[in-house]
Picture 1 (tube, rainbow, N blue to C red):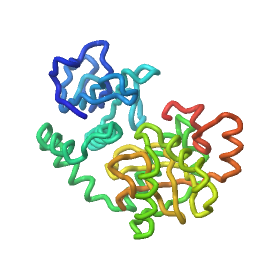
Picture 2 (cartoon, rainbow, N blue to C red; picture 1 turned 90 degrees about the vertical axis):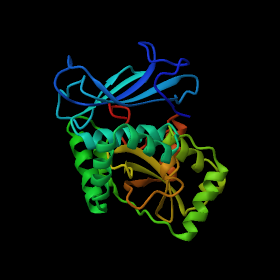
Picture 3 (spheres, rainbow, N blue to C red; picture 1 turned 45 degrees about the horizontal axis):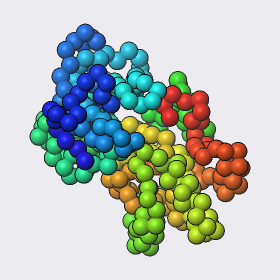
Amino acid sequence: MAEPLGSEEAPLTEDSHCWSVFISGGSDDEESEPLAHLRVQAHDRNAVRHLILVRGGRTKQTDRIVESYGESGGRIAHFVTGDEMLAIGYYIQLLELHELDENDMYAGLEDAVPDLYAEYKTWREELDVSDRRLRLLDQAEADTEWDPLYEDILEQGKWRTVTHDNDLQGFARALHRRFDFDSSGCYRNARLVMQDNRYWENDRVQYVEGIGLSKHTARITGHGWIEHDERVVELTWPWHSPLPPEETVYFGRPVSRKELEDSWNRGEYGPYILNGDASQIA
């Protein structure tokens, strides 16, 4: 559930859980301008988190696509970018991962930042699948200049198939009825499926890991999902499940059952191909 700024129940203080997306401008001493602000339930369910889109107040210091700052526990996180389209798209990604109503969120942004949101919608809708694939690769290769997360998957992966075939729709709906998936844990969600004998023993079902670029077309993410006959079923992103829109882009490879078993026997639970242990992005 989301509520606007100003509630007496959870005002914004120095001790608040707060994730902010900054559109870089001026200097760190420049006064910031909050553009959108929502109070949501944090993923641990025991705290309120403030999600804020901000112009100014932070300056991008490097050539990284998004600079991230904050506490290791995730209570405070600042994401700084110099690109307005990236910033609002990234903010929308955060809204989705907190399981908010999609149409309500779009309506709220249209009210809060009408010109910026209209520009973002036009930009996003003008990108075709080939543009989105190029964006995924460009971001992954840029990230690899300073972080190892995507090194191996860029060498091993291939484009995955996104489709809405009738048989796949039935399979995906059944999967979502059977399991209670969590929007904060893609690898955990995929493991949940594969540990069920019904799917483990079905060689048409595979755990796949790699890189996803959501329909918001903002920022890539390391991701895990399930495929049936090499067709993507989304488990984690609420506005993309059970089958993602066809403008969503996935790049990755299946993880074999032997790889999964060996990893589980070592007490590891993903990611399996992505270099998560050494990554600042993951």
